[in-house]
Length: 237
Image 1 (cartoon, one colour):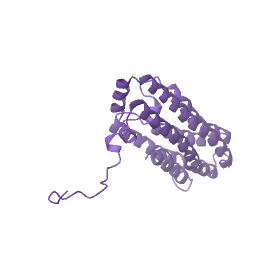
Image 2 (spheres, helix red, strand yellow):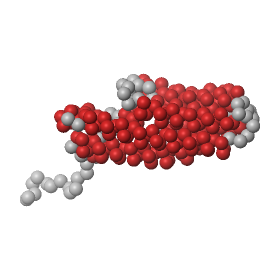
Image 3 (cartoon, one colour):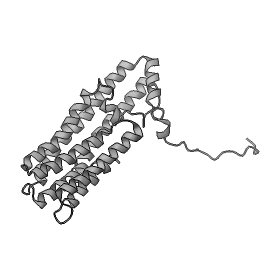
Image 4 (cartoon, helix red, strand yellow):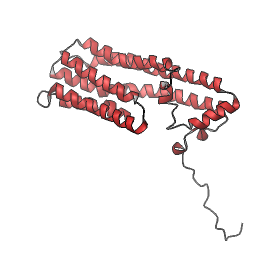
């Protein structure tokens, strides 16, 4: 949902609706912005916290459309594409000491992991310091995924956006870049994020003594299946 509402759908809308024969760049930009804005407000009402991905998607679409309206040099679009993952990559380790570290939003959150149970076991076993070290290492692995994405974003933007600024072809290229860059760049980035998640889970198993399945929130655990059909109470043992 994050990927669809904050990247793919706004990018497609910006590409298709900004054409002169349709709504034009201004109305196309406004409609494209409404998707991440609406999703962000919905998520805020549901979870009582800001969705960082909706904020990034909103800023990304606003910058893409705004730079297009200003007809700036294509080089600055490449800078913009690299700047957002670069800022995220730097923010992940920098937010470790805040009330809402980004690493907890991304891979250590109570929607997936049973953070309450994990926290109690860490205190019981006196391994809170080890957990903080583990979280710090996971943060740097996550940060490397976004820094890698920043480099790829810049190179992809320089390759795809070549039409004169402000032209219909340029608007179409920018919209296409906005949604093409996500699957191209997010796949290797997701691999790195999965490495961070696996290392976090392995570390938590050692620090808490819980099994992999016990680390997850009850609603996210795999349903247990019977290995054999239940025995009829009336039949002999």
